Amino acid sequence: MMQSLKIIARIWERLLWLMMAAASVYVGLIMVAIIYITTFRFFGATYNLYTTTFIEYGFVYVMFLGSPWLVRNRGHVFIEMLTAAVSPRIRDYLSRLICLIATIVCFIWAWYTWQLFIERWDDIMAFDELRAQLDIRLWVTTIAFPFGFFMMGVEFLRFVFVAETMHMGLAGVASDRVELEETKRSLEGDF
Image 1 (cartoon, one colour):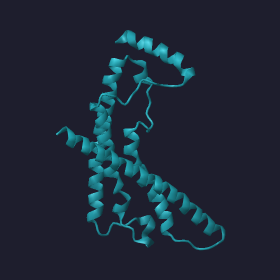
Image 2 (tube, helix red, strand yellow):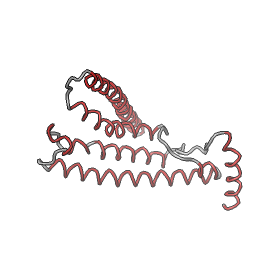
Image 3 (cartoon, one colour):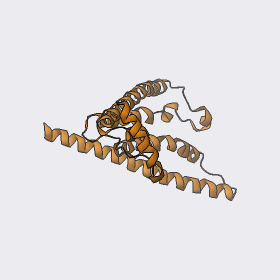
Image 4 (tube, helix red, strand yellow):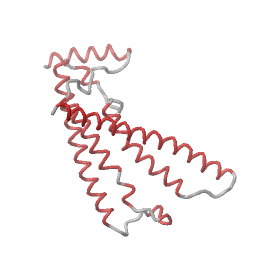
């Protein structure tokens, strides 16, 4: 049983890594596409209109492909002022509570965006109005949302149960340490 869980965990981690790698490649392709469009515009030549759509949709795909990996590795933006100011025991509970709330929010958004995706998938007349001449189905704009939110939710949920919490209690830089210590002392008196 334990061996099976380790295999599943390894497959899940590789999937997240592949998603992040795909997002990274996509960012590189976006840069190439921008150079392509800029060069063709500079010389007054026409370029493929799908290139602009590739760039615009790419920002959404990159965000939702890469975000689960960032959550897993604490690479996303989060603020630790409160968790750094409390005792380690309270930080442990507070961090798990924050991750549980983030999990619930991600799963709610995954469910709602899945409904949106299905609605757009079923509507054969739903096309991107901004790109009407390109005949791009509207579901293409939302397919990444439910998967990204679901996988981020799983990663936040992981931090609720694993030994090491998301929040490490490290906030600010050297100039902020004095203020942090004062806040910590005042909060310790409250708990």
